[in-house]
Amino acid sequence: MPTLAEGNGGSGKTVCVTGAGGYIASWLVKLLLSRGYAVHGTVRHLGEEKTGHLRRLENASENLRLFKADLLDYDAMAAAIVGCQGVFHVATPVPSGILADPELQMLGPAVTGTTNVLTAASAASVERVVVVSSMVAVEINPKDWPQGKIRDESCWSDKEFCRSNESWYPVAKIAAEAAALEYGRETGLRVVTLNPALVFGPLLQPTINTSSQFLIYFLKGFSRQPNS
Image (cartoon, rainbow, N blue to C red; front, side, top):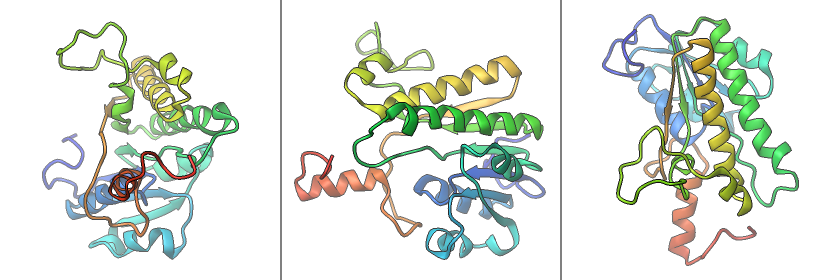
């Protein structure tokens, strides 16, 4: 199969995008639709406020199907993935504020949700899964990494260092990406991970994404997120 979203060869192919209403995922859905793919998008809420921007995309009326699906609900994720040749796993838990139980609120859901997507992809005979991880899984105090050496697939953030600093989002991203790659090795499912940094640009969705929110805090002179 040609690389997903590469070129204009999407005709007749169906792909699933998890967390379709988010910043990266919304632009991905727009790109896929423009290149002839049929798209199954998973969202937690089907209301107009959360999904209207997706429904208004060019070709959406013919080629976009939205599914209400939580990452922790395997059956719901499987229903969205069945019939797809590829999956872009973009969704990730991002709780706001202080976490009373990081394992329960973020770490467990991140790994379990990713595993659910991959298991459903295997059951549906999906050809490739692209997992959107984060630079925080790579760049934070990597152990024994030579200064100046380009960071590659063998470079990982120090999970215990992040845990000791209560940086739960990096811990979750490290654990989820490692689980995804291990699943691919064990089952033969083609799994690719991407590690974007902060992402800025025009918004398709009506809410501010986390990267843009950091920029707003910076411009307003906050040294950290209010109420954090």
